[in-house]
Image (cartoon, rainbow, N blue to C red; front, side):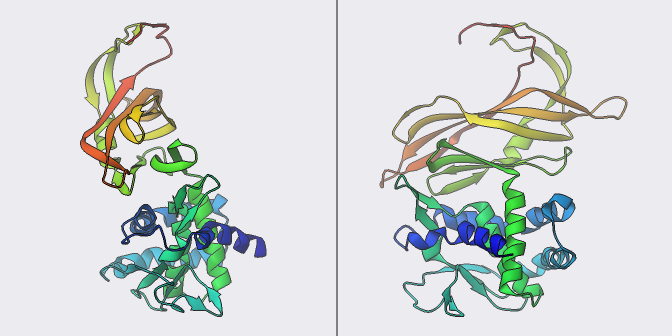
Length: 327
């Protein structure tokens, strides 16, 4: 158990090195990641509950299921998750003689206070890194566990780690630069083939959920007439909605930019579960998705998303396109 608790410490206490200099007014990327994790607690908890590989004990399974069942009631409390600086309120997060990353009460709906001094840190390149969604999930599972059980801090630490690490394996985070997540994309893969991923675009301190736009952009053609030469597309007739899609091998194409302002393209492969006449859905993996967007800079020199520039395009590029002309 000590090893698991050590992992949790690495996940959630890294921000203690950073202090409160990078928090701003509570609207930074770490805060947004925490709130996003809160809004998706049930989704991520069910992933863990549905798979043996999450390795829950019977007691942990009961607590996690109770957390899921209580979330509707939890959300009746407006602004349940709040951010408080320990530096500004000394002693607020000192429990049992130790500094904590969060604290809460023992009833469903109790406010959850996050220590804003512990959610940002500088990496070895001197770049400030926000708390990630999986790390935030570990913290929230711990605190929500206090609302539905009398489990010890150590037991809830372990449960939070298990859920966090399991979800981490289903999240692909791809920054433009490997050491800087100022501009990055986060893809949360579904637990079943007949479902769709969550697509998050992070630009500066903004987080945009592109999941619906992604869902509306993917399709299965009913009839395809192949054109063997790229970049000319195949002739496709009659589109229908796939029953599910995987978005994988996601990466950035070469961008045209000056500093953080410029044009960006995210490219990834699609595997569709397409409807079939014999009612046996077929997996089709000859599609790609490109996500285009542009950024400018704000007064502080940070990137700012140009919302009207966002464009999602599905392309059909099967193996038989052997000849490619330059664009």
